[in-house]
Image 1 (cartoon, one colour):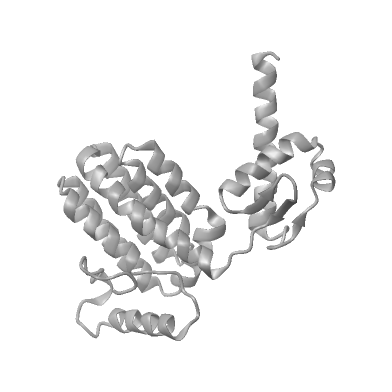
Image 2 (cartoon, rainbow, N blue to C red):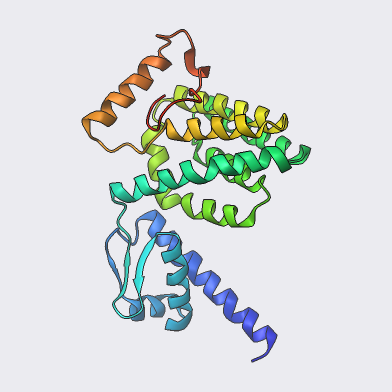
Length: 250
């Protein structure tokens, strides 16, 4: 097989991956629904081989439950999965921030600050701030210079999981502005080369916002944050997270 033929096959897999992923993210393919590969391949005008490869990629992102012998279904976003993704971020991103403080140059720092500006501008416009928030965290990990951490982070920030968590948390624009203030402090620590502070601030920032679960404890946590945002402690929305806070505390 020629090199040009291999490139062509790869492009077909990419196109199938994009098409199926879009159907999942838009809800056209409902959570828990079975993906009938023969029918889906016919709809897309491809053979089952590139479809199977695309499904494996989607499975690696948590969008599809795929078994070559039993077939594929669209993954269900259960609460446990959301919590596992959040816990993995608590484990990964603080270490990436520490590495970024040791390795990031001026361009990386400037890029991070620009993304914080986009996040605040989104609040001012009354628009969606998810993309700017996601891009900040992915750029933070990229600033570590470690490609393995980048791949892990991209998996955790797949929209099917991350957007759901964010949409449940970012109901009050004051929360988003408080997160932007946290981001500012993290970048300041990175720019100063303070790896301990960068890691601690990042951990506190993520740990303070676990996925909402709907249980009474989560409701109490949400109410506590709302009271802080009302300025009960005089800090206002820029108060930020306590770097010594335990997971789930603000």
